[in-house]
Length: 477
Image 1 (cartoon, one colour):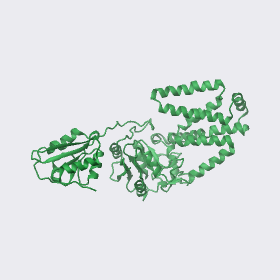
Image 2 (cartoon, one colour):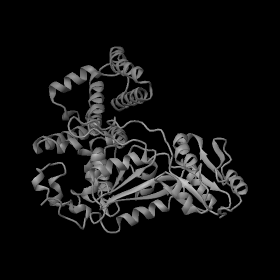
Image 3 (spheres, rainbow, N blue to C red):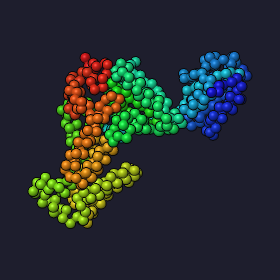
Image 4 (spheres, helix red, strand yellow):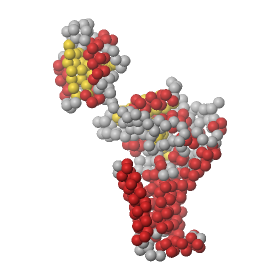
């Protein structure tokens, strides 16, 4: 690794070879005392006005000896450090920190005057709350850490950074409460992050593949959130959080499946209301997955499952349908998925119009033309709405719904039961970082059931979840 030399021109030329891009600029100037300086900076990432005030104006009258400690004292920037390695200097320039080179001095000074455009803090679109904080993470790493520091004003909050990605050199912050997190968990996570060998990490979702014990699993193994209050609450329970520079979505581990049936709003309403809404989410998800499958299975194999009056209504609706029950339901389901995908990708106002056209015009026309039956439209519509009761599991449950539908059309009710048993077995045997995915239900942890689907009052939650094995068990006196 090459280092800075006392020859200013050669050092500048060597640094420009490492950074040949046109937006990497240099600015040479000489102080009143006759000492030559040069700044190297990335034009889009550097606050040039601040650079001029804190560096150029500060060194304009410098007449001392070319020593790094003397020059650093003259600079008016609170963020300065001395560096000799050219590769490290190039890395600093690429993240927005300008480098100051000096004649007859074998070191350079890095000045913290980067200026990265960021959007304002706003309520995250994926986690809207009626009660509680409305702030959400943004893409700026420092802003996100400040939101956490504001909520956890303790020296026990540790934020350790790791660079991931050979070319992107993305900063990943490992956040945890010292003395609260399980022994060895932080080291395991940092080890997995250190083993990642990839060019670019553009978003935190890339890390979930490397942190999962089963990378190709259908179910999630890493928690996600866009809200600082939820993130801090999970840290307080004994989890480790990950913030990725450039991503508004934070990660938390270990992850429990029951987390996605909970909401931050559950802790700002009475316990009975929180329990009711959690049970409602669970019911909606189960109905969304199984209703189309049982409808098809009942038509093909078990007509006696329908009440007589309902059977007569269904028989009248499907009499002239040219497709089999399973093919009809599959067709309607695929149309719903296409409409959903199109409404998301289209511009906002066009997407709203597309949803109305697809739901009303297309659905009504298809029923009138005799391609699909009215019960099929109703069932798929209710199933689609039920999936959004637990939005964090939409990707997994939509695939599971399709799988159950195919099994029901092929084998019938027994196939649904066998497929359910297989899914439960898979969930029971899945764990990540030593924590079972289905805890506190499997294995059963009676203490943690107080804040699972059933929500107890705050006074009953005086200790941290036993599932997370925190050494600091007491959280409420």
